[in-house]
Length: 400
Image (cartoon, rainbow, N blue to C red; front, side, top):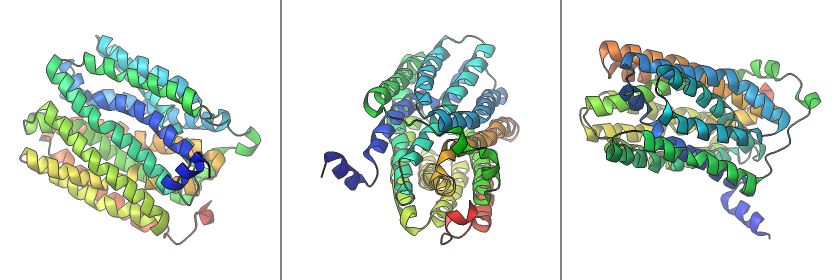
């Protein structure tokens, strides 16, 4: 037995997936150094809390508009188009340290979003390329775990840099290195990212995806839950630092602890979904997720904040594991890039409204009420998935 076959037997997936996930994890590690603190960066750059949401909305609008064309292009031309975008991402991150005006920051947010659209949706499609229905849950779990592990130390390192230097420039300079490393790793180690499909085989992808009922239910789920996620992206750092008085280092430690919990949860949920069905492993963790968000909004001290965030880490596992495994099961292989792009667009549509909602509610009624609303939205989503997704014992082929 060759070393490659031994490795595949050990981890249960194609070894190329592992190598690819290492590359994507490098890019994600760079993002994690500063991303937790980006609302605070905007605040210290002179942007009022009520206007911070605009900068997030610009990002999500551009990402939503570009993700589907980016996914389609990757289906047509191959996944290697993400390599150039990694170089663009590096330049963009570094440029945050040079921006002096609101207009420059808005332009960078748009460029940042475009780079993301050509990297992360396409990377999920590549994992679909290299996995089968029998091991896709595990493959997506490994992909999700690589993201989470990459992001565990980043916030802590970023928090220490911020408190030692009193600014954010060093965070951006350090973060910009890692997309470059990811691009080099893909070029040198992974190399083959696929050739793409012919136009004749691809046909027109949109109609098949629109009439796929379970797929559209998942798109609705992405809209709502990523609206929730984007509200929390803005509210939680502000609530923790301004409302509870915790330090940047503590917030980084919390992010690392949540990352450990999320890593275990993602791998467990993804692997179990291969054996026990996708639907139940998608829905049940979200119950814990809703409870965690509610308790987070009720936190009165740092210990309660940490405990609530642990529950969120457990419940957030289906985002990057089970949901995308279902998409891979439901959609034909020549449409995986487009489908992944559509899911990313749906996510960003939700995130378009989330920052505006967070800024408006946070400025009007305080920082707790948006978290209670987020918990309610998750409960509504759970009910929708339970009612509208087909049972686990029905084959995906019935709906294609």
